Amino acid sequence: MDKLELKLPPVAVAFLSGLLMWLVAKIPLGEQLFPHTIRLELTALFLLLGAVVGLSGVIAFKRHNTTVDPTRPEKASTLVTTGIYQISRNPMYLGLLLWLAAWSCFLSHLLAMVLLIPFVLYMNRFQIRPEERMMEGLFGPQFEIYRRNVRRWL
Image 1 (cartoon, rainbow, N blue to C red):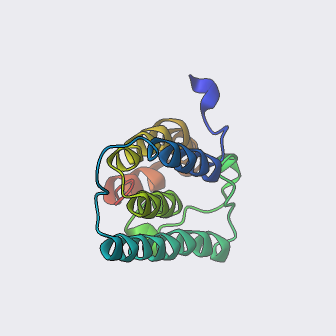
Image 2 (image 1 turned 45 degrees about the horizontal axis):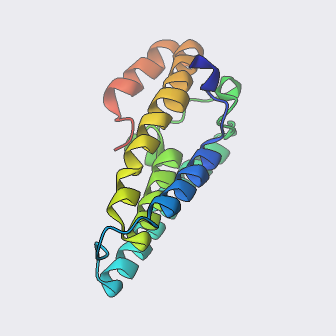
Image 3 (image 1 turned 45 degrees about the vertical axis):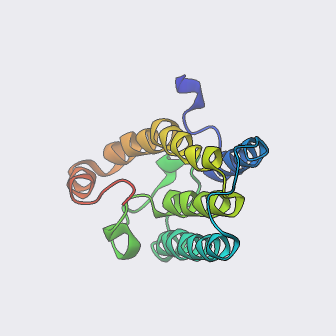
């Protein structure tokens, strides 16, 4: 299982999750979860939140001249702990999760929403934990203090 660590870019994992959500939404379960207008409002809200959170993470990394390549965390040159990184250790992944939440709202299907859970579990196991091991190796006690003070997702 360790062979999956840091292999699939998180955007690809999100895309595959979204595709799977779309496929399971084809299974008839009765009525949609949300009325049409609420469905569109929730979709827009989660899309906007995902964009703000995710892009804030990317911008912070760019400002600190450190890598945004999720498959090569060992290339990190700086531990970013300011801005959005005071709220979440993984705002880019949180942004992807919020986009998937938007997609699940748009699909308005229970099984699509349930598939948010495997996305989080996969990201925790195969992306975030390996990244955190590398950050601990690169930044030592500074990263440990940061990890104790800031939550992984929210």
